[in-house]
Every structure is written in structure tokens, then in C-alpha cells.
Image 1 (cartoon, rainbow, N blue to C red):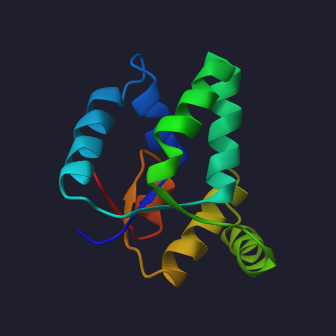
Image 2 (cartoon, rainbow, N blue to C red; image 1 turned 180 degrees about the horizontal axis):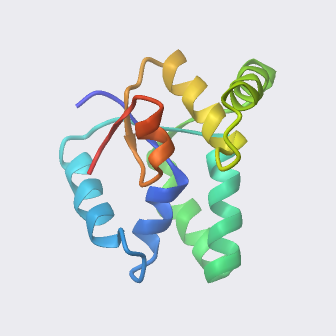
Image 3 (tube, rainbow, N blue to C red; image 1 turned 120 degrees about the vertical axis):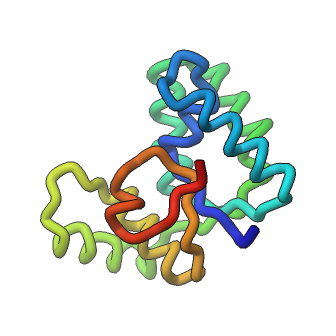
Length: 133
């Protein structure tokens, strides 16, 4: 499989056995690892993930994520070149529930020619990307 973008929604589902998508996330992740699919994310997704894991599960979960999961990710570090087009996309879409993190993710995915996302966020599908399930 070609490179797959990893979203916060999938990471949180993996780390939380009580999440309604946990089983799907585990199966999808196992498949991605078996195929040795390259995994891409942004630094904004990392920040969002650290905040959610820390708030919901504590700093041990943040440390576990950093130690066990972050090393397998290729990270696109968000600078002005991703931030500004992401903000433009967010403002253009005018969708109240669409986040800047997602809009920046979409810009990154298009720039990197990545059309598959490991995500449980409908915005990725709405934007025309294929979800890995």
C-alpha cells in the first residue's frame, strides 16, 4: 500500500479500548503494519493527539504514544507553507465543525499525493480521501 495519513481520531481509537472504533482501529493498524505501509502525519496532529491523550488518560499515555507510536511516523512539520493554505481552506469551507488541524492535514495530504487516511473523522471522506478501515 502507498503512504497513509494518520489522524488523531485513529490514534485515540487505538489507545482507548473503550472507544467505539477501537476494534476497527486495531484491525486496520495491524493491516497497515503487515503491509509495511509508510505512515504520514503532521506536527499539528501530534499536538492534538498529545492534548487529547493527556487530558483523557494522563501523561503516561502521552509518553507511551511518543515512545511506541511516534517513531513509526513520518512527520510533516507545519510551517507557514502548510499553515496558511490550511487556514485558507478552513475559511473557504465555512464548516463550523471542520478544524484547522484537519484542514492542514488535507493540504499536507494533497501536497504529498496521499489519498488514504487512517481516520474515523468523516471530514476526510467528505474531502474525497479514502479511509483505511
